[in-house]
Image 1 (cartoon, rainbow, N blue to C red):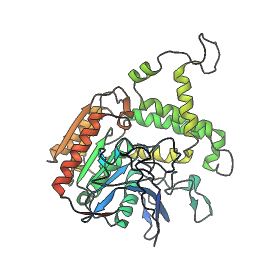
Image 2 (tube, rainbow, N blue to C red):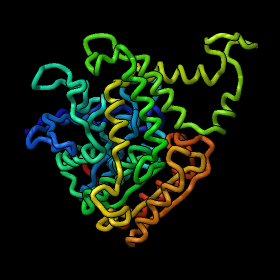
Image 3 (cartoon, helix red, strand yellow):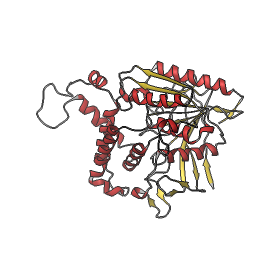
Amino acid sequence: MATDDDVQVTEDSALGGARSVGLVETKTWTFTDPPLELDCGRTLSPVTIAYETYGALNEARDNAVLIFHALSGDAHVAGYHTATDRKPGWWDIMVGPGKAFDTDQYCVICANVIGGCKGSTGPASINPETGRPYGPDFPIVTVGDMVKAQKRLIDHLGIDRLLAVAGGSMGGMLALDWAVRYPDQVASVLAIATSARLSAQGIAFNEVGRQAIMADPHWAEGRYYDGESPRAGLAIARMVGHITYLSDEQMHVKFGRRLQDRETFGYDFRTEFQVESYLRYQGTSFVKRFDANSYLYITKAIDYFDLANGHHSLVEAFRDVRAEFLVLSFTSDWLFPTAQAIELVRAAQVNGIQTTFMEIPSPHGHDSFLLPNPQQEQAVAGFLAKVHRQNGASSRRAC
């Protein structure tokens, strides 16, 4: 059983310029049967997936590109929801007419992961057994579970094979899992600022964030939806996480040791340094748009991810993969350093998988993939164009 609330994309070149996808609306699709079988041994039903589409499917339905978001992202990858939006989707610099993910050529799809809080089923969703939000009763989900849910969406859309799966950070993990889990249904993989598994250091930072949330008295063991949410704990978690997205060089250039709104030390615990003010702003703004329980669940899914799980090695994990790979890393990314990208490249190449690798100079740390970068844009555009030519092109029809 499924319900569908599809809304067509509206093109509005006046909003965001001629290279913008214009106004878009989020679509939702819900499935119940069969329930989604989770890695933890439980099942989940009903499952709602929020997603957006841009561009159009061609007649052969072989030009679809599935983009995955990172930890705090959502399905809104490009364009605007209203004419008064101050900011476009989170990767608008990459998705649109004539951009790297060219919506004149490809049908681009982006879906919010399960466990999230932006329209897909997660801990804030209503538990059909109780009529109240799941909270801590929501099952632990993995990256693999997120992929399985999105595979159901792609099947619903009538797409047998994706031209590409793409993502950065956690999104790159989903792209890698898709290629290993469904080798016959994806032609190419764009793995950006990601790795086959999170390092111990990365897990440690995630745990600090989770502990900050759970130490907030308003967390209430995850059952806070009828009262005050753990805003302070979530803000601290975001502050800690945000530090890992930046680089020392970037923080030095942007903030240094400059003071905020004062010329001398105050010898107190108020905000004094510009970097303190910046982090507090990041934390405060984040709690307005994200659910604390979703933060717990998604970071745990990232920690659990290991592409070699169920295989003797990472090399063996790539054994049945048939997709061509583009792997990008950034020089200042210390959360997902280049060495981890090279590990992916070597495992793919041992299996004879055609792989393109590029380390891109950037001072912006892990967040580099979200910022304008001509080398990233050219690499993605060129790679997709080549894969598209190899897979043929057909006449277009509505996505």
